[in-house]
Figure 1 (tube, rainbow, N blue to C red):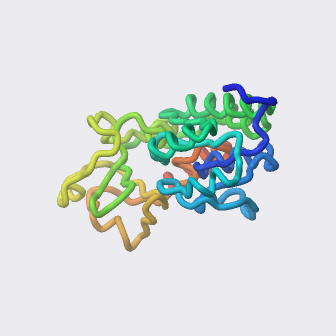
Figure 2: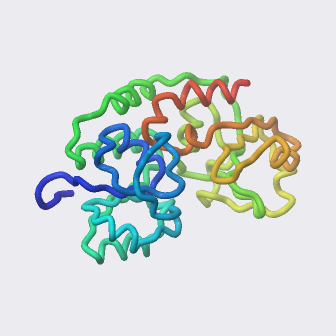
Length: 242
């Protein structure tokens, strides 16, 4: 992706993990981010609303020469509006760890930045990550209705690389929606509860999955692709094995 006058100098991020990545690479590039962009701590940029319903007028007022988005987190119609306004939008959608790393490499290149240290380290860590003993799991991401990870998801690939097989990995849907009574019939070694997008807790979630041992993990390390990839394998393996 080319830009008039060279690499972009004003970037708005609509993706928390990419906000983290850009800030770790060159924080001076960011002029706007969503309300959900919590990393790095103390990030001082204009806020443009949520990922699903960003304030597009606010984004335009920031005069970005690049907006970064994600095909799952952000709506196609919002991307289309920004592009129609003449704003380049970089859209990511990596379903695997390797594709996420390569996507981040391309983004850094588009920003005119050499490969940052954190990205080089992430490549190294994921070349030979730690693993738990082979185990099976179901991974809820929402309730009312219950939704779980299915096929071809980034988080599913993260777990697979760490030795955990998602029992819904062959499902026709990427995010299967379960009938009300289905959780009680699912058999797996673990039920893995991330703390986002739904904030599962010991009192909200495990009671519906009596055939699986509950484990609580960091959603940032399970679903984000950015600097968190460096520590994700060690953090997740420690949580999964606890």
